[in-house]
Amino acid sequence: MEQQTDKRQQELTWLEHLQKNSWEPEVIISGITLAVLFIIPSRLFEISVVLIQDYGLEQIPAQLILVYFSMIVTVFKIFLVIHLVMRFIWAGMLGITYAFPEGVIKENLFKYSQDVDYPHPNTYLIKLERWCSMLYGFPISVAIPILSITTYLCLLIGIYLVFNLDFQVVYLIFMITMVILASFSFVSKSSRLKDSIGKSMSGTIGAVYQSHLGKWFFISFSVVLVAISAPFISQDLKGFSDFDINSNLDEAAYDWPNDRIYFEEYNSEKKRFARVWTTKKTVDSEMLPIFLPRYIRDENSTVNMNALLPMDTIQWSTIKDYQDQFRIYLNDSLVQVQNWSKVRAGHTGQMALFGQISVAHLNPGIHELRVEKLVYLPPFLTTGNELRYRKKWARFEFVKK
Image (cartoon, rainbow, N blue to C red; front, side, top):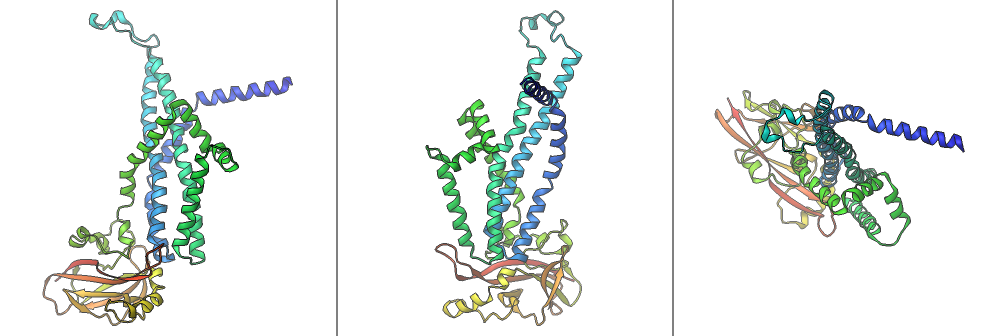
């Protein structure tokens, strides 16, 4: 019995020592983690694009995964930055308490300041220590539930890709699961699922914060946190809509083409190209090289397109190959590329079709290349399984010397 008591006392002493000196690993972990977190969003962006182009993942699930992961990363970045700033303030206050342990000496102040009841700097030091420790653990209560949902969604998407299922099946399973979990979480009666969620690490941490800070403050703060994260998530998703090839470009992107997404020489970030692209903006030869990025899901939609074309009002020839889904216009004149070859091109070596367009007859100056596309919308709930003609799919201007 005495041995158990001594062991318990040793554990408590060790825990108290760890709590008192937790600031050291906190600062180290925060700095290293922040450096990694600022790299992750761009890598997630690249992985999502690869899944869309090379593995046939649809835009909606890819964007959901990217949004969820971006939210987790953003929440941690916000708290770690605040935590580091507060730790710097805490370190400054610690230095003040060490240099001036007696605190404020009123006799040395101006007379008009001597009436103020100044607290000892230790008061603020203790408050800062408490807030730093509290802030360091809060992201876990928000990020872990989102991470769990994202992991579950990734598992469903993996099954969807392996077995080539319709995304609507995966979406229904995902939404039904979320509704069931939400229902069990709010029911008044105790259940195994509710108990397991509540007893989990994130559930326990959330309960600790709610019980000490107030449940409504906790909920309100979580909502505000998500709202603050929105601009950062939007920045992480910038350019991702270009890979939604079932849609036209928006008016601004179409009227004001971004050279970085059409020309290799301006693609300084060395990202994958979403739509048609070429090497240089200035053409000094008789042939203009163009590349059409390969999207495996569109490539595999040829059968569905040909089945729907006879019943549709869209005037389009039978699709024999992937390139037949595109129409290329040079200064509003439809051009035919005779030979297409399969290549790995661009800065990333992405799969694409390579062709050449004759520009020998063009006068020196600025000219336009425009691409239209026939797209197949897969079934999704009560919509889909139909064709769409995208006239503003891609557009750029080049200079003929």
